[in-house]
Length: 112
Image (cartoon, rainbow, N blue to C red; front, side, top):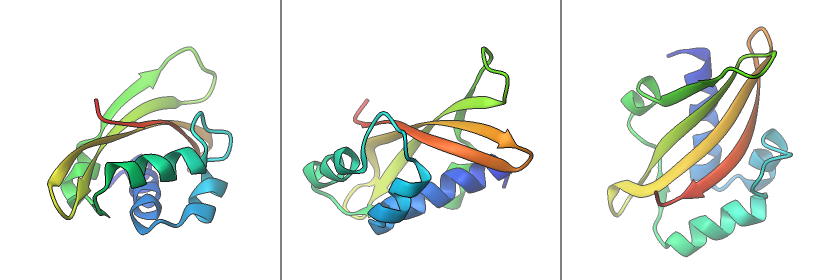
């Protein structure tokens, strides 16, 4: 698994576990607040679960070229206990701020 995929997997794990304070610290400055993210999950009304391992090896990653540091947009399909692959999708912007050090922002949590 790539370092970027590890970052995404870690963030999804916190989202699935409902670790709101820790997730909030890691994605501070995001377009969505932790309260917004929590509300979307609650409104969806199903129980999030970790996606299969291969999801993190097949992420939808788009490089954003107008930046001085490597910055990517990542779309992550989410899973629930009730549905398996759900309609929910997590949209992140992730920047490599130093070699192996990443900063993430949640752009959206939506049903595309």
